[in-house]
Image 1 (cartoon, one colour):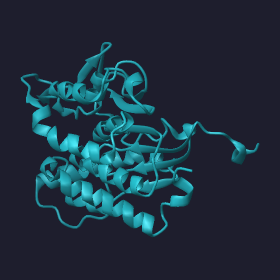
Image 2 (image 1 turned 90 degrees about the vertical axis):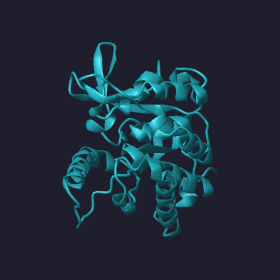
Image 3 (image 1 turned 180 degrees about the horizontal axis):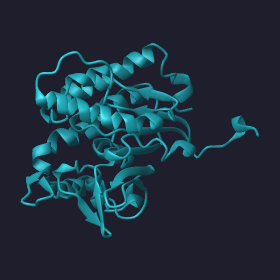
Image 4 (image 1 turned 30 degrees about the horizontal axis):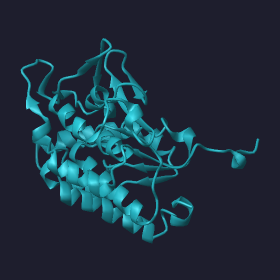
Length: 266
């Protein structure tokens, strides 16, 4: 009856989309928010957004996350797979996670973290927030056809972006204000350089459609148009992509589109 009196567990939450290499932009988003005293205390994420999100939930600063992901390159965390279900495997990613997170369990994180996954067997999205962490995180990054699915508890899990690329609903009821960081800008695109760019555009539009209902749950949406300049596999452009996320978020703050007084720590 009196929704304005409702008490939330957290003041500010953030949900981080998938987007492969474009997901590095989330680091820039968090960096700009931190500079203005906005520090989300609950996080959800999928795919690359889950990688950034879990490190943030583990207590690393945006600068610390940047340092880790510059060192732990995409090529270091992947290996060729002879499986018929995927060209590459992500087992090496677990070794990297063990360096930075003290225990293979959600309970080791300093902030609550909700992980988006796609259940390939039952054709549905799932969210994990407790229990074993590393294998489910790897599963959330396993792009179908490129990486082999991760079989856990007799279920084939793949990239969370397949079913829900912005898991806002996972934490919507737990925070007063929810910020969405989406790195797959779907605006108009004039130039297509060949079949590869057409395929990537098609994938981008597909996953954006499943994210639209989740975008509407966010109080504030960060969706940098500059992301159109980067492909899913531009991992070598990490610094440039981080800066694009940072610059866009800073502009939103300067324009008042992200109200600092309302969102900053008090």
